[in-house]
Length: 257
Image (cartoon, rainbow, N blue to C red; front, side):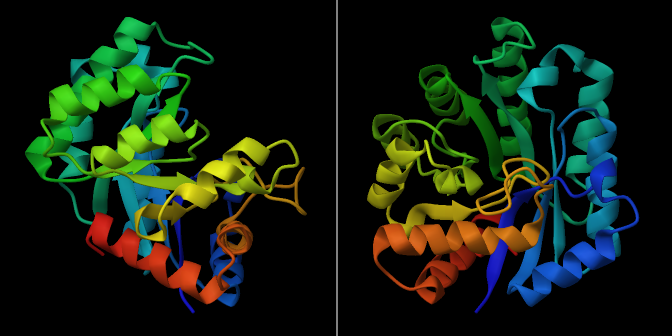
């Protein structure tokens, strides 16, 4: 059985000096590959993601900037990111997107930067890793308008309703579920997960965040993606092996790995 953590930030300081041990635990849990996602917190997280992907087999990098930090992305930053995007080991653009829950960056700025990243992905012929919170209409509209149905990708750590999920599926995107599925108050999200076809679903940890039950309160890590997959299997009334097989095939297809 092979699992892939499709979204993790293990390049962060939370894992300093522990990468080998983290990867060993992941391997013991059946997690053979990890997508190390750049763009969370600061520009340098992209360099760190690319560096990890170069140094460790089974790791792949993405390059982008989180919508929280869209206000920090100017022309110089875009030039650097576009150079990184075209480097070895980079399999996607992101994370990028819109977050209207926290509004750490002005919404107009978020939209402008997101549209620019969609353009970068189109030119590089790479998929998008999209963060969306409380902004599904604008997100879907931008993906349609700027992507012109040429863009593929994943809505990571999905927390919306089924109508939002359906809109993304209609655009050809995958839907990714995290440890939130295991939370006590996530009943509505579990109902959405039941409806999403396995051939359009990914699983992730979003490490170091969103640690699944029974490890809530601790630092998350890629080995725990197995708990997300087990939850999906229970919701789908199928086996862990079937979920692992489907989600792994989906990651490989999307990211070309």
